[in-house]
Length: 284
Image (cartoon, rainbow, N blue to C red; front, side):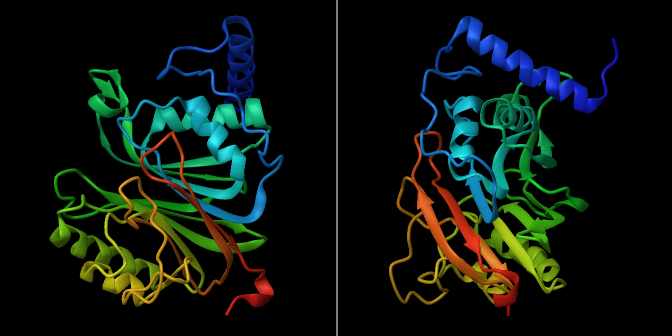
């Protein structure tokens, strides 16, 4: 029997449900876990909500738990970093099968890495960024930075709808913490592209605190969703990592935010960061 992609996903979701019902929870690190699903989970996507989350890789977290984490906040758009393509596909299937949340997906893999993502030795899994969107995505690009540092890094971008408006959404992961010179070049590449758009959302793990000099070009083009976070410290900038640093950002260009939330999670060393965007009439 030959199934079209849509039919394959329905079958995958059905099999996931059947498997969970028959065999129950698996050991930590497996596809399924014994963690109960959050009772406060939103029942449908929040149309004006965007979210960024570094999944942490390698980390001992199941994709079912990751899906439950996303379903708790049910963003219209979620950008993930340190994401294996196979994991994201499972997360997407679990979101539909267990939570009734249907997402489109685009991948921004920058390398094939067996150590991080498994797969056959001759066909290792894709590793990098990914975007889930409740609305279709168009004009996708995947750009690898000229110099990634100790590991290839890049950004991806798509055009999609957030709260009924067309928005260019970027998702990136910059070079590691002690690689400022690499991040400087990467921010220059990203900020130049963001500047081409009147309305843009930039999600990602920038591996730098707000007053890091290399973030200057990004601050020139956009503001962070946290009103206390600026290149010159003026207040309490809420940390987004287990080591109490602000590394994760939702930068907004031509868009204003209603509110933002940072939520620690057992499923990653980076917290969940999401923001609700102001209605179209409030966009300046």
